[in-house]
Amino acid sequence: MAKTSVIARANKHPKFSTRIVRRCWKCGRKHGYLRRYDLCRICFRELASKGEIPGVRKSSW
Image (cartoon, rainbow, N blue to C red):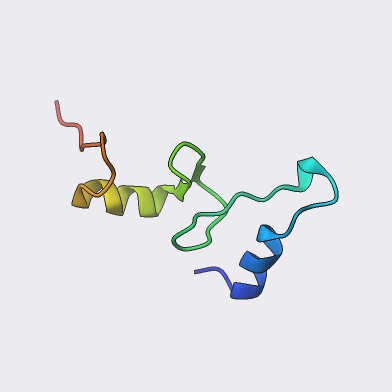
């Protein structure tokens, strides 16, 4: 879980567009971020396993 000060800094409008830090809305993690779902890989896996993300299911073959 990221500190609230770090999350607040990421939410501010940056001076340059390349400084945008995308963070998971659930935990605040910045690495392993999936843009399409606005989540990190860990939170994505948790929510997908619970079936809370529409259109996503666990694959098995």
